[in-house]
Amino acid sequence: MSEFLFFHPNLEFKSITLPEEESKHLIKVLRKAKGEQIRIMDGQGNLALAIIRNDHPKKCELEIISIEAQVSARNYRLRLAIAPTKNNDRMEWMLEKCIEIGLDELYFIETKNSERSRLNLERLEKIAISALKQSKQFKLPILGEIQKLDSFFKLQQTWNCERFIAWVETEKNEGLLKHLQSNLNSPADILVLIGPEGDFTPDEVQLAIENHFKPVSLGRTILRTETAAIQSASWVSAFYNS
Image (cartoon, rainbow, N blue to C red; front, side, top):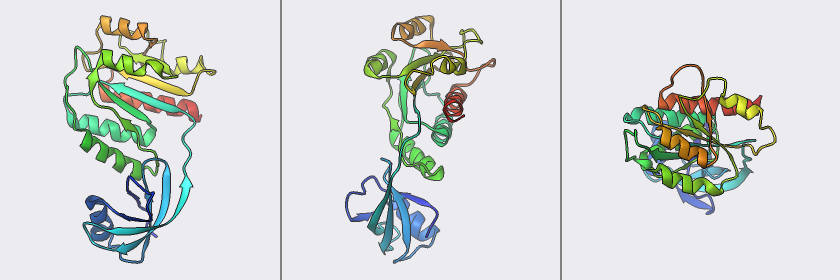
């Protein structure tokens, strides 16, 4: 059986057809044929065993043999809200690495110093699926459309989570890890807000504080936006898995 994971968004039916890219990888690249078995996931936590019934390189047909597992979630939830950079490659790389580390939701925000107001979510979702398969995880993160910062504050009001805003002006001893350690009884549901290269304005930080965000430092050096996201994901993962 192939060690590779494949993706289909719906495993409810006994017979399914893989998307073209997945079909091409399975049949043309891996040279799998009719009658061979593969594992497939739906991005919702389900892992299934399937058999190839039609090895067409563009529309490979599979028969679901069994749903092997309802894969449990991690022992924490991480949500990131980030002002995307002008360079698409950096955002894609950041998304890939954060998923490998552990990420549940990613929202994009537009701030006063933002460099980008549009995103190709379809491409980002493909990268997310690829990262999910590569790291052998089974829950596809939520990817939110880009929105104004004040709209995001309205969106997150009902979430039962610990809220942090990474701000360069924060005292270096007020680090994210220190806050996590001092709030052991709080929900293991973390939201980190990360600004653009020019950082948040003082007014934006004040608005975040009014919405129950705590300013935190991510270290003693100035990080790029995408590095700050990966740093946040790494620290939260290390804290809850130590």
